[in-house]
View 1 (cartoon, rainbow, N blue to C red):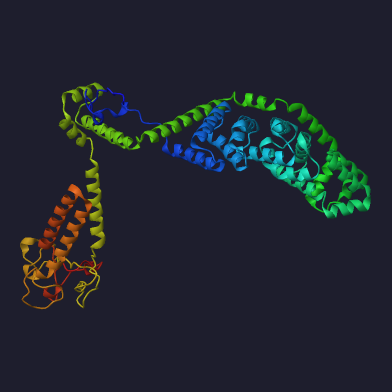
View 2: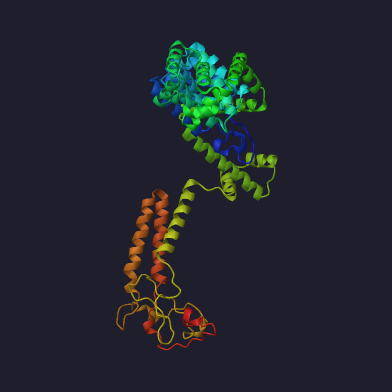
Length: 547
């Protein structure tokens, strides 16, 4: 049962229904329907990929919220990790088992969930790593940041494209990952960007076993290819083997590398192996020394700062919003929220009306609310600007009708047909696009109407514009037009429905009646042929018509 809200103000009194309660004391639901719907759609898509039930996905989402708060991540960041892992082929069990490590690594590396998943998945497939190697692998990436310019987020982004090439050259296991990261860190020190470093290393690894390079090496020494092949099969350190072979092939002179590698990028990487191999070894040792526990150390430092606290608060609020949305949807109370919003609008209007009427302050409004009934409150609400939905719809429809009238019957002050030989404007002929003739303004009609009056002589109503003399009764020629207009207005009102239809129908009939009785075009044919008009120096009178 809903809790009773007891608030005394201008719109409330004991026993009042919700409509008469004070708006400021009814809490608005904090849940965002869009956020709840977005999360539910994500869960549904992942569930379809995994073939999981709704209950299973609900359990997964509880894990998502738990790890998001544990590592100061947003739930959508963790959801990205879950989605990427599911797309990579992981089962629901794998995801729930590995999500702790993946989110911990995500925060410690500062990488996106997708890059974390892709780098791990590629290392698992290319280097032969297993689940027990996962934390060591991510620790190597995190520790590499202190050994060179290749930051952990960039390393996570580029490794998925480089590890397959490294695997072809015999890089395997945790040792292979450590050698690759050390090589990339040093390479970044001698190129403009980390992207160029990754490109050079990738090109070198591909060209090392290409037919052209193997042919050139075999010309220098037939033993080079056998030594490289044996190193790959035995899992030896391919960087050291390649360094030794290049030293023998070039005599330690980097300018001779062009005889082996024609590609600029591959030659850059070969130069670093030849000249900076000691730095590569030093970087590998530094990474090995710093890797143990680096994820926890990084997170401990990161989770101390203010942003991490704010992220935790935001994640908690986000979870609250989603749970509130789930609760509202499950109870079917969304329609009820509309009732609450309407109620608050009424209460605010009552209070606004009281302020306009001189009743100021909470205490005074409360006293007024206790001593007055619903009829008085309804009247005060109208003073404060309250309008019912029906009234708002009627006003909107009437405005639409008025706009359509202005569009259908435009006014043309120039009469649209030029002037005659005497400079008198000529109206459009009968049946032309402008249906209403001009209102004659002339000083030839009785003086009691005044100069410039819109007086219409009775004789002007006997015939349609452009017709000659005849005996057609006054006003008869326009009756079909008025009848058609009346029919259209009445039928339009019937489509509006309920009382609104009756209102529009009555207005339509009245407007049509007024239209027939008061609006008539005036034929110019019965005006005197010569009307002198003082046009002045500007000749403005020729545009305005006779005066």
